[in-house]
Amino acid sequence: MAKDPATPNLGDVSEIILAAAIAARFRKRLLSRDLRKLPKDKPIPLGDLPKIDAADIKDVLRVMVKKGGNDFDFKANFRKYDTDRRAKIKSKVFDNIEVTAAIPEPSARYISNEQNWNGIQDLFLSAVSKVNGDRNITKRAIFTEFNLQKDKIVVSGEGTKDQKGTKVDIRLDLFTEAGQMRPRKTTQISLKYDVGQFAQAVGLEFKQFGKVFGDLGLEWESYEEKFLEAIGGSEQTLLEKRYRDRDKARDSAEVKALKSAVKQMFKIHILPQLKLKLQNEQFKSKLALYAKEKATKNESGLELVSFTKGGGVKQQDFGPRFINAISKNDWEATYIENESEKKSEDPTIVIYQAFADSSKKQYRLIQFRYRFDAIRQKMGYKLQMRTYVEAGGLLYTI
Image (tube, rainbow, N blue to C red):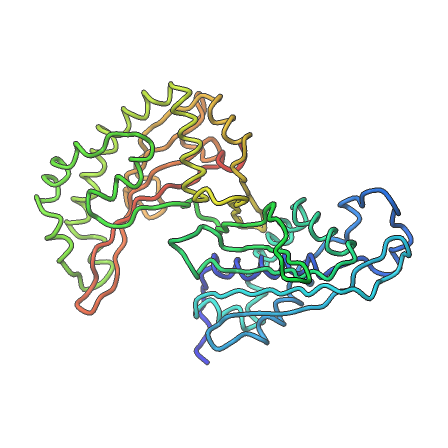
């Protein structure tokens, strides 16, 4: 087996850990000694279900790793018996819990080595916090334990299966004994780890800006002539150029020209439009729906979840409260320079809470950032610029 990577993709690793945590929630049921406390006819309080911890997640993860296939499709199956709350005993009816996750090979090799788990304790803590605090997951766990029906509980980590067709990274579904899926009230999760980016347009061609600004009703097409002039008049020349390595590409005159052109576009063309439109409540409603669509593709019951350093978790369900809060609050826009840690001068426009400090990320709603990227090919590295739509602190807390 190849040597474990020193630094795995923590987004990929977070996915399999959260899938295991959700499975652990359905697996960890009331012990026999607790059954006498159950109310016979009243709803069972959510707090009565025992909390999961990191050890519970690791128990599930060990089985997933052991039974994983050759293509790093991890899986595990568990059988758990329902509780008869009237008789206050464990019944003979059982549920089947199935959990799967497929992640890329480097991260899969990393998570397959249990010795590496001590280095990612924050991810386990984030998963514990998410699952124990999620009322919907807890309600469904209570439902399946006490309904005295043979349920199939399916937790699927599928973020790497269809990156373009869906935003779903983790899906939870319940099925009856006959194989009929129960109505999905949630839980579908788009999972991030300590990154702001939740949508993007990929490519250095000018037309890519339409994917970011077009849905907001911002006029962007008329800047094309100035953009092409700034980069030497031809996108094709840049598309055909190859560089010896990523550093040469990043530091090239071509990337500097691209960023300079986009800086002027953001400051002179896009920013004034945003400043004006943010005074309009109808536009602010469009902005809220824009954020929802970019984060979820408007998939029903999908929430955006972000694990943070230190074992925290942030989330947003983009429900009516979110839409109303953006529509009714006051917002401003500004251009930010030289903010990235690497001083790469990524052109960035920030939308933030009016009368707040735009430099403090907790007051930001979203931002648009243009950054360098390159893809490796046989003849060297090809430029592949990206325009990110990124979450500020307020996107999760508003």
